[in-house]
Amino acid sequence: MNGKRFYNPDARQAPGLAEAIRWKWSSRPQPSPAFVDDVEPTVPPRRVSGSSLRTTLVNHSTILLQQRGINILTDPIWSQRASPFSWIGPRRRRSPGILFNDLPPIDCVLISHNHYDHLDLPTLRLLAARGGASFVVPLGVGRLFRAMKIGPVHELDWGESKSLPGFTIHCVPAMHFSSRGIFDRNRTLWCGYVIETEEKMVYFAGDTAFGEHFRWIREQFGAPRLALLPIGAYEPRWFMSPVHMGPEEAVEAHRILGAATSVAIHHGTFQLADEALEDPKRMLATHAMGESFLILENGRFAEIE
Image 1 (cartoon, rainbow, N blue to C red):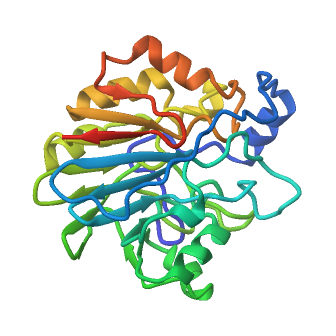
Image 2: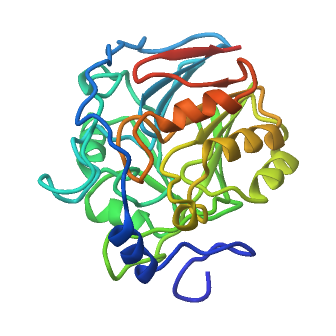
Image 3: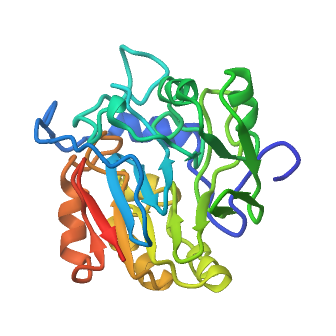
C-alpha cells in the first residue's frame, strides 16, 4: 500500500479508466449463447468424513470444498447478474451447479476481492442468515461486511493467517485490483488463499494475472495437493493480461506450483471479456497436462485423494 491505495508490487498495474474506455469502444466480443441450459444440479453431502477432499464447482469462482467434516465456500455467487443492479451488468449464462437451498452447512467463506463477480452481497446475506459461517476477506473489505451486518468477519493482509477449527487460512499475494465504484479503486486489498489442513494443502488463486507470486507460494508452502486456478476473461490480452491469466498461463502456474491436481475456475458462467463463453475451457484442453488439470462443469465434483 502506498498510503492510500493498494498496488501490485514489482508488477504491472491494472489498466486505468482511459484504457477501459478504449477497450469498450473497440470491443468485439465473440458471440455466445444467451443461456446454456446444460447444468444438472447436484446435492452434495452435508459433511464428508475421512481424508478425501470433495471439490465441487458451483459456478464461476465458487467452489465447495469438503473434507473431514469441514465445508468451505470460495467467492460465492448465486445472483443472476454480477452487478450492483438487477437490470444491467454481466448476466448469468449458466445455472449454479448446486441450488442454494441444497447447500450443506458452511463453516468458512473465502472472499478474494471486492469485484461483483466475487463479492456478491445478496448471496453473502443469505449465507450469513443461515448462521455458522466465518467470513475471511482481504484487508479493507471487512468494513463493507460490518456495514451489512455480515459476519463474523476476519480481515487478512498478505502474509497473515487465521486459524479456525480444523484448518488454517493463509492470505497470499495475487496480481489484480479492486473497486466496486468509480471512486474506490484499489482502496481494498485483493488476494489468494492457502488452506492448510492436517493432510492437504489447497491453493485458491482468486483472480490473478500470471506472476512471480506462484513461485513464492510454492517456496513458502510447498506443492499444493489442489490448486484452483482462473482461466477466463483474458481477451483482449493488451487490456486483460495485467489482471487475468489465460489458459496457457494457468497451465504454467500449475507447473510452477507443482500442484498434484488443479481445477479450472472463473469460466463458463459469466462472459466478462471478449472471448466466447466456451473458449477458456476449449483452449485449456489444448494445453492441459493429462488428468492433472481438471475442467469441471457446474455441479460436477472431483474426489482428491
